[in-house]
Length: 120
Image (cartoon, rainbow, N blue to C red; front, top):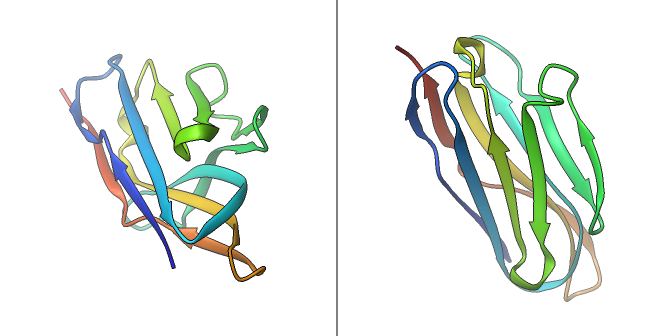
């Protein structure tokens, strides 16, 4: 089994910054990709950013330029630096990992989610 543990969410004012972290642990052989998704109340879960391998990144258009995803492969950890936060960034942010497990199977995992609230 593989577990994803997120941290770093919280309450921030508009224009502020937050940094989310997600660490994967368990029966990991290697990790193909790690990323962040978010889900606001009444809306579908959407991609925020993903990092494939060590350095190939993809962002949702509305986050590009404000958010930065990075990864520490040695720690199986992915980070999301969020700057210039807006009210509409309020959501539960979920970590996702595409993992080669030690049994040789490729599996996809989700974290439990961390709340980000942008409010004045």
